[in-house]
Length: 315
Image (cartoon, rainbow, N blue to C red; front, side, top):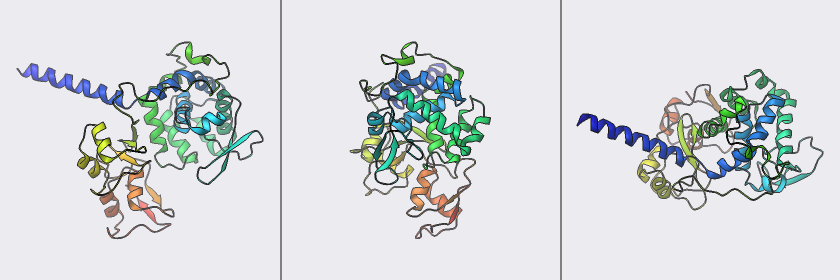
């Protein structure tokens, strides 16, 4: 009887693990990887940037090639004009109508991304790292200022590990000939769009990790209840994980943690300098720290907020 129970528990664990893995994968991401993995491998050979990092950045920055910027201008890495002398398009980002580079095809975007990193001094230290050291590359990109999102490195690492992108750092072309150039040797982004959704059809959200805690980002139309149902938990528990009251309405673009946040930030993230408009809650969500612990750690009364320029302890 004990052996039977043990076998059942192992099977339940196996199926739950595989279900979670399936739910955290997006078919649009898989389609993108099949289509552009070879481009990333080429960049690694020419410039020394891990293929996994290039692919993960392309996936995140372009929304798996489906963002308006990617479709309109083949810009898969969100690179702005700066000293650019080529064609350009304008999109709202940190400010309204910002100038972004426009490319003839996706391969040109990949090549410019590599040259962008290689030619700027602030990224120079990254090229001392091994091609297989995607974790330090991810943290290094965030440290060098590639993105303002404090969880950017963890998002890159989560995508790499969820989709086994590190296999391409070894030059693997596991998906076969189709990944090289598809039907268009230029990698034109105007080819038919990959279908959206997930492999098993049960989940609509891609799961990331911050500070080791899984989270998803809410979309228009989501509610706390719908997210809870999607990930087989209760709305009350989900609200508790995210330090949210019963009456708060879920807005689009919010990080929603699927497990309880940590007592302190990830190793290496020791302090945070408060910027205009930031709140204790927002900071606690960015670093996946329990809100109460963030207050206590910094001896701030629960009735007060942080001050601009204040240095908060994160661990």
